[in-house]
Image 1 (cartoon, protein in one colour):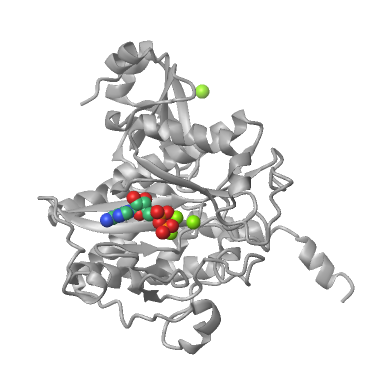
Image 2: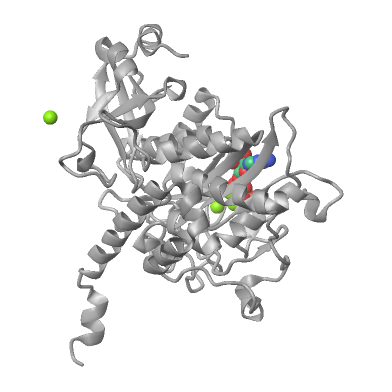
Length: 434
Ligand code: ADP
Ligand code: MG
Ligand code: MG
Ligand code: MG
Ligand code: MG
């Protein structure tokens, strides 16, 4: 186990960010001087939980964020500071059931009890905007089909290469960076890892990308649909399950698309719970402007609208790009990194246990011919739809934890109500003179 005080001495770290992620995906931290870290590593840093999105009241006892020293990362862009992910513990009653990293910890432990390690890679897309967040930062980035635009990616080389250099230094094994399908949009890819490690890296990647962008006078956003008419920010996940002895349990050359029976059942669980798990993978009001969206300027949204799966075809919710894994294309950039992994494992393990069948695979172009598929559920049309689908899915709620599910449904319903209490320009435009 890493001794954080020792880590500070070795690396010249002056401050630790003891960081946790709340239900809405916000990262919260205290800056703790290295001189005080030994105590904090043992006892945790105190927070008033009510002040963040955790479904606690002001009367609750202090919440302690207990650093998981194995996650510590020295900030490559500010070496005197180190970030460490932590688990939330109530000072009077033990681990906080609804805290996202605790939910994921419980589910990875469940998989481990079944002798399985879930390994995933995420693809968090982001836009580089001007600081006020209303427009893309590069006025020359105007192509109708801007994906892989060589000239535009080089105009943002300073930001992209800085982030990629840091990932190389951290040993994440990044392997490609590109301009994505929307003007101002980028994607950077690094190697898959166990679900908890990926969740920590995903969190840190968002923090790092925002920080580096700010340093360059820009604003990075992972918002699902920051600009109407352009392709939104997805956060696809590639998933495989491994046995303890290091065998990919999803790979079987003899099966359809080389996906083993275990892979099919795990996928079956994800398919079965898809509409409900959208409440987690697509967690904001804005998320539903990305899925179900009309065709974008580039020609395709690259986001699904129906619960279907296929081989190497990017128009469906699930794609099997090659042997031994599948890709879930539903999640968006607003997803909580811990809950994303947790809900995939929850749905997948339920599929394994019940030997769920993913149903018939469809190989059509869903954007052109999706109307032909009449036997597959449509994804939720808005956040309220998704919250209700989640609330109706007793199995998924139980697998994610009853305390977590109750807290999540309550907080997300409040968010929906807050949105509905907001008067929009659309309403004025369409209702003022009625
Ligand atoms: P695409 O854009 O074609 O969907 P990317 O190359 O952008 O794919 O991202 C693929 C992600 O999948 C990476 O994070 C990669 O490490 C990950 N990946 C590759 N193989 C596996 C696997 N067996 N299990 C889980 N993730 C994987
Ligand atoms: Mg105080
Ligand atoms: Mg990709
Ligand atoms: Mg992409
Ligand atoms: Mg992808």
